[in-house]
Amino acid sequence: MRITAVVNQKGGVGKTATTINLGGALAFLGQAVALVDVDPQGNLTGALKTVTTEGQPTLAAALLGQWRGPAAALAVEHSKPGAGQLDVIPHTGEMFTISRDLDKVHAREGRLARVLTSLEGEYDHILIDCPPALDIMTDNALVAADGVVIPVQAEDSSLRALELLLAQVDAIEDSGLRQTPLVIHGLVVSMLERGAGGVARSNIGRSVVTAFEGLPLPMLGSVPRGTPVTEAWRYATSVQEHAPESEHAEIYRALAKVLVAA
Ligand SMILES: Nc1ncnc2c1ncn2[C@@H]1O[C@H](COP(=O)(O)OP(=O)(O)O)[C@@H](O)[C@H]1O
Ligand SMILES: [Mg+2]
Image (cartoon, rainbow, N blue to C red; front, side, top):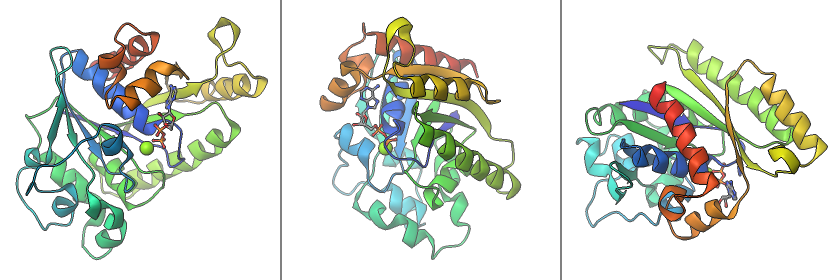
């Protein structure tokens, strides 16, 4: 079982879209996948219209130690694309205050890791959709994950955000909370405004992409801004299910293959 955090403390850079569509692509390739929504705003859960059943235990209760069963009970089936499986461990109302509530417990950065460990054998891949903040839930994701995928936009503000994120990854590495080094799978340029030749349309966009390519981090690929992504979101699914023949679906399958091979 591979746990990947889709992380960037900047909002609106494509974390949730990447989590859903990378997850959909992994499932399409035959992998059993669970998406975990740790953003207090619950955008992934809202986008996929995931609802918990009456009396189902919640991620928040598991994180706070108020519920201590196997985490598979937290999952809701979304769909079975291809030969695989796409489940969601959704946001519920208690997640709105999770950061404050975790302040009151001990070993607070390791809570998500403990919960997800009990999914061993249930899934091939767990993708964690992180909040738009370098907060306790992002720290939890960085402790729980084996690797990270970092969605970025071809804008100057994304370069600064990336610096802060990499500093936080180093801080977690130095904290002693992890047993093994965190693998940075790489960057995914999201919502690329494409011009001629498939590269960024604006000079600034091109210069930021060049700056990303100059970093000692793998560049996993670019996802152009496009209707398959917005339409799939509208229909509460991934582009693999909504528009499997689209260029976007193909790009996400290529990203998924990188994770499978990692
Ligand atoms: N490739 C894309 N094409 C069109 N819209 C996109 C694309 N990627 C993301 N979006 C949209 O941009 C918005 C912000 O993306 P989102 O994934 O929610 O960012 P984050 O999770 O980092 O805040 C969402 O409405 C999403 O549907
Ligand atoms: Mg999001």
